[in-house]
Image (cartoon, rainbow, N blue to C red; front, top):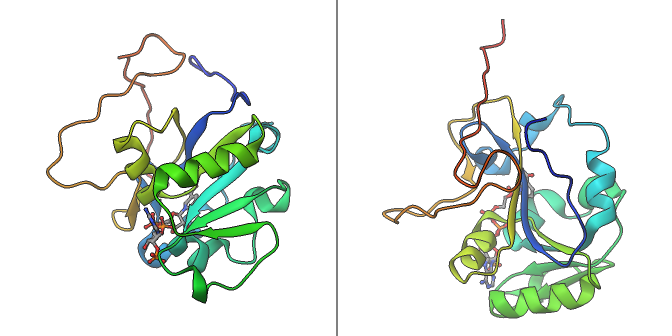
Length: 185
Ligand SMILES: NC(=O)c1ccc[n+]([C@@H]2O[C@H](COP(=O)([O-])OP(=O)(O)OC[C@H]3O[C@@H](n4cnc5c(N)ncnc54)[C@H](OP(=O)(O)O)[C@@H]3O)[C@@H](O)[C@H]2O)c1
């Protein structure tokens, strides 16, 4: 794969998602059904199970999707932190801490809990806040062969200036990535 670099556990803050080709990480009403039947490269799951030390999520994702489930189909075990302005009405769950604090403080808490492994941010809204504060180390995406056209975008910020990124690996920091698809027959 062109310039592919496996993930490493070095205490990074990762904004990590499977994303549609048109930039959505969830469909309308948090629908995740579009992910069904997608295949990922061999070893991908183990790579993230091994390198993840803690997960930081938002309350909407928690209420709609994660809830009783756990990241990576339960293959990963570790502390999950959920940011919310109203932790008092959250159902307590093992290994889950509901936080009502500044995002930077939430990252500090998650980093400490991760014990040197990576913190995975499973929330577009929290990832955006952290990016604006310079607290995202890497954006790690797996692009699925589907167009959603509606739902929750990876990065939703109206009227903003472009956020320049550097490509990790590959043919240089400003190299575009070539992909080619055709509509399913
Ligand atoms: N494609 C993938 O790989 C993937 C992976 C993970 C998640 N997802 C999807 O991502 C979606 C998450 O959507 P989202 O980003 O719109 O929602 P979200 O981040 O999960 O939840 C937003 C909520 O988090 C709380 N929050 C956010 N920032 C906060 C702050 N600074 N302080 C306190 N509370 C804060 C607020 O909850 P309160 O209203 O309680 O205050 C806010 O309304 C879900 O649909 C999930 O399924 C996709």
